[in-house]
Length: 107
Image (cartoon, rainbow, N blue to C red; front, side, top):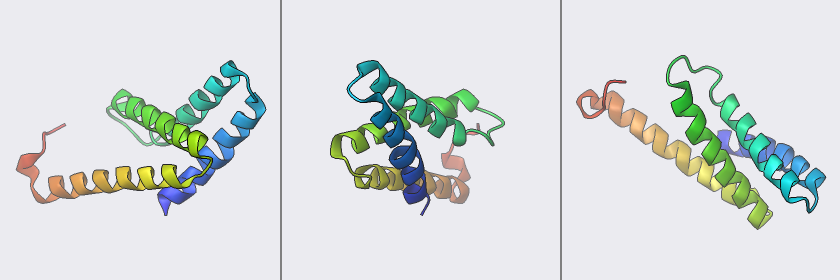
């Protein structure tokens, strides 16, 4: 459910609103991408105590990709599917590290 809720909020509402305000302005469109991706990254980093930059950069880039998918398709479905796949891969990696601690680096 998290990918659906987050995509509705970050891409559907935030990016969509900023994108409409930007109109055909190239600068405005870039600002819409950047602001929505940064808010997405910050929201995923608020609880981080270590490795903040290592979390911000990939989250920001993922936010840009999800916004691009929404902007190009006009639908939230590509962003929701990509978000769900990303979360699934992260969960699988976490479960593998919990069940096989010797396979994962100590961070």
